[in-house]
Image (cartoon, rainbow, N blue to C red; front, side, top):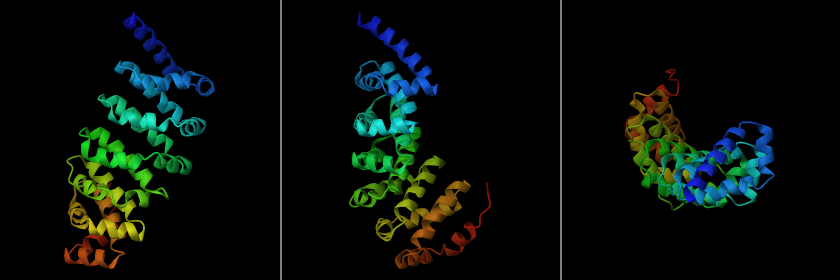
Length: 253
């Protein structure tokens, strides 16, 4: 009986995902019990049901009304729990939903308040799938730019873990790690922390990266760090100032 029930639920969830492409049906669902049923799917043993439920939540998170509901009804922790799912697609759905929720100031601050940043910092070390790491780094960069982020980051392992990803074999991971370091070093405290974490040497090694976006990301991070005396001294000692200046005007695609 359970198998038959799951077949029926799978069919319904596929129809819901299809219906959510239409704004009126998506809007109706957010005013009904359908949303809660989708969230309940997160805890199902059947991975197909979990995947379809979490996929539908991405559509909900893509609307302003949906984001507000997900925040005010405290569904964010339930989405966060899916970061630990053993199915890659489900983890990807959870991160994509969280990225959508965070695409406005109220969303960023709310997501941070649910203790997401420390979880992401742990995942920088634990996650082995490169596609998921890209989503983690994308979400982290959005949150790091929130007002509350500096206090959360202070004392965490985020900087050494970002440093390790500067050496990734995947160009997008290298780029996003550098972009995150650039965002952290936006304010004076972040600059000091990033310099103390010895991020400058690996960033300078990226100035000759074959991928222009990686070179640009590292150049911008270094340009920010060079605003601090100690950062400028380190870059000068590594004999990289001229390369940074040249790359600031790099027109490569």
